[in-house]
Length: 231
Image (cartoon, one colour):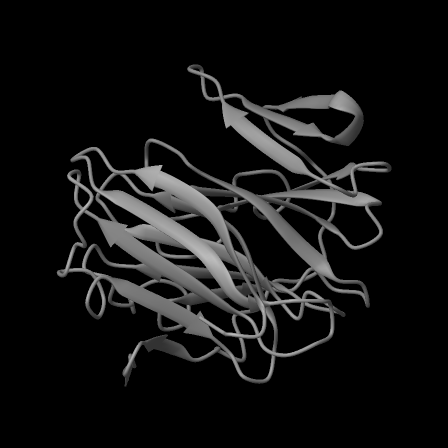
């Protein structure tokens, strides 16, 4: 953690076997100042550190050239860990999805060496808000642009490829005026997707037919455990 900046707890999830995964961001102060990083810690059900995870029970994701914003974490049916966030959250930036194995190592078969970077196009900052994992292991990613004008719902396969049968090449867009602050989604038992935003706006999706610009998996960030770099 950084001594001069704010450290924030952001998400806590419990795996089916009772282990506790804690995620937060360190070095986060005011927009445009300093460097920020995503931190993950895992504990056993009795509260002791799970030393089998990462390096002495912790992992950090950091990029010295771009600020990172943690959005959400999730666990897939087979036990992999999904870490979602945004690059350059103080200016134009993209979504970043990192896939980890159960022991905290990078799943290099996902995306580009363990990373999936999503560029929605244009000159605005793209902010990832929420992640859900479907029963087949597909990832649902929800977010919006900086101005809060469009909401994006994206479905990717468990290997990081876009699910072409969902929406338009894996993407559904919706008018999101006034949703600037927060967005969340939930899955119904019948597979329908419920999306909510600021001012108690709710949408429910089955499929979509809206156009989309581009998705890339370029410019991988650096991934570190404390004291060692993971390749």
